[in-house]
Image (cartoon, rainbow, N blue to C red):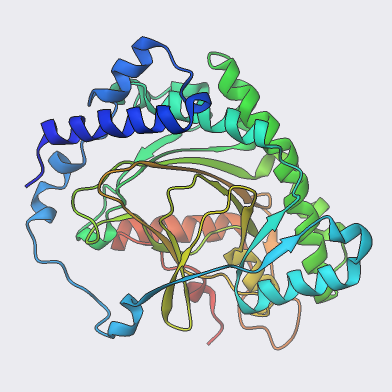
Length: 366
């Protein structure tokens, strides 16, 4: 049984321990401290999913190998070597995209100061009252940016115990009421957008695709940013922080804190990603898998909840314009061509109908 009082006590202890270890990360006002220790900022997960929490958990598929978890060190790419050993570094990037679908990059150009500022501002906005975050015009984005849980879930395995702000890059300039948040996001986005384009062009070169393809297909304001918070979850491991999925992007670049919880699947095994404070994580998305005709792999991944500690991350999704047509670069093609808008609409329909994303298999040529 989960008790609110013990939850709050644990948060007080965790806060004090974090303050002792990292005082620079807790430069917040007394009002913010009170808010962080209260419950008014938390989404109502238990009340909303009370019926599902009492149902038997269905551990599908039955193959136990998919529940074996091992820790691994992802391929590490030092991007400074592109200046000195470009050919060798490009081969390592291509191998990681082909064999793993995930890799880490260091010397990526995003300073620790920018990352620390982003984490601070992200924490502040998630500490705001839940009712405030739920307002339609919150952050003044073109579409409702705040989301939590999964209103279409029919089982626990479809419930993500997390909250997020998900918005297009074009929405950042509208955050006039949150200037410090906007500045932190802009500083991060300016660098990672260039990083995503550079990595995409390197992988395009391996495929024999013109490097101008991504400059023409992925205008700067068409990509997306998602700030994530994973609250402590008393029902882990039955409930995920983020359910297993693949990304609807060309590439995703992730900044995560040091809590851990990210896992990806390789050879029917789940692997834990060990956090590295110096690295950003890059993973191949569905669109690159389709474009490359399965040369590069969009790998299923998830976030495992923790009982006592919250986790934060920020993901940048490198995406094309809605009208951009994705088609396999070699023949025979494995996938029929589709526009990014069609892919998004199909994903939304699948979530609406089934509670989860289906993905690229919808576009396979039979």
